[in-house]
Amino acid sequence: MRNIFVSLLLFFMVSVGVYAAKNLIADRIQFTELSATPTNSPATGKNFLYFKTDGNPYWLNDAGTESSLVPGNLTTVTKTTTYTATAADDVIYGDTSGGTWTLGLPAAADNDGKEYILTLSDATAGWIIDPNGSETIGGFTDIELNQTDETIVIVSDGTNWTVKNYYVNAHISASSSYTSASSSGAIITAMTGNSITLPVGVWVVNGSGLFNRSTGTSNATDFRTLWSESSSSAVSIGTGGNMTLEYGIENSSLRIGYNSTAQQDNYYAQAAQLKITSTASDVLYLDSIITAGTPSNFRSQVYIYARKIGFR
Image (cartoon, rainbow, N blue to C red; front, side):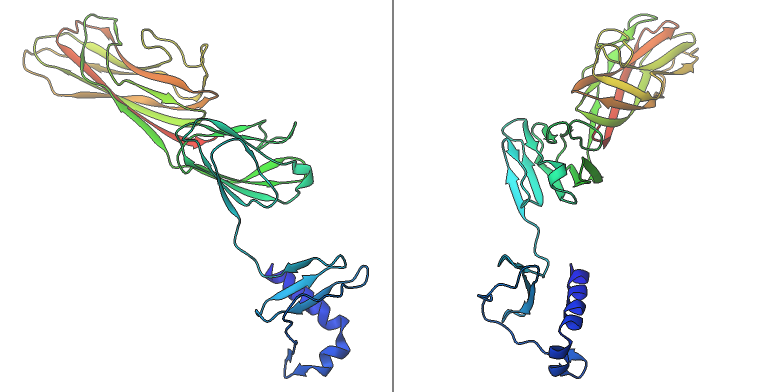
């Protein structure tokens, strides 16, 4: 805005050279400050540029509309229920403490260059951002913000809403209790806390399994961690659910041989890192599986950590 004002000022100086020369003091132009908006409007197709007693420059068009040439503060609003953004809004805080609701966007075609900063201030539920009609936002028909302080900056290109910037700092973690293994080939699914719920978005997920044996003997045993969509059996990610596996493998193995009767130390099997896109809230499980050996007196525990990296 400051550059625009400088350009306008230079234009004004050229256009009113006689006045400028008459009122030139050293290397400056002297303006008489006005105490109020001029009562006479410029001629059609013309504009007035002037200063007021507040020291700020103003622009008056031929319709008599006055505009300040000093950049103002962004207009900030907080909303808690269904609302359609207006041209006067700049920053919109969404509060979903009362449940999920939708923020409608005005037509991008009528707001070329308009920018919005949208921040989810309370993430009790999801906040849906819905463009006008068939318009899109970041290439999607709508998006959902669901993490506290998740922020997206969008700008109209005259056709759709493009994503200028995106910020999220959110993670979900879970840790199961110890659960004893019972037989070879069994998936240990009785663990408590071995799952996380992934809301809509793109997530990077890590996990690990902790295995130990309190007493007893065992032959060589193969421990594995297993990502699954089911709490009771191995179901590949993307099978009938809302999650899509973008990359990563669903199980990893740690083979250990036991031959003594002494108590064993802890052993870890790192689960493969996954990238998952969730189109609706869904549950991801990390189980343990013992595929070989006699697992009497063995115990298992898992840990899961997920970090959100995108809105879709």
